Image (cartoon, rainbow, N blue to C red; front, side, top):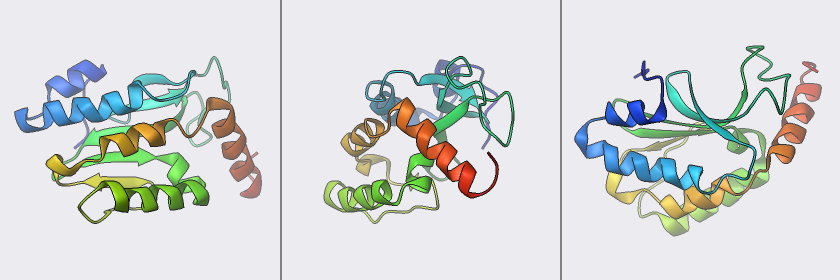
Length: 155
């Protein structure tokens, strides 16, 4: 479900009552733990944490003029979603995340390439997402992102 909210607060306010508190806690896991330099905004109808164009003017290669997003969080029809590009592009980070998820959650990990689907609202490993948020500095993300772009011939 793509939201038309223009601010993160408006986004959360638009959620069903049973999701507001849980989603706000998920949001805080990222807000309080991302390294300095990421900015919270709305993009693609989701709350997104990105590198502002003032820091990385090249932005997202697929959509020039758009800040480079690392994490987006969204409330979908049947689950909450965390889209984390670091999990998509860094196999060591992905392995760490999968291993820690097994330790910190009772449920089975439901994940696509970069999307973690959280279907059980009472079993979200908030500490794991807080720890994940700390893992990639702005500088590291730009370096990894440009390395991938070079590899695929886009830089």
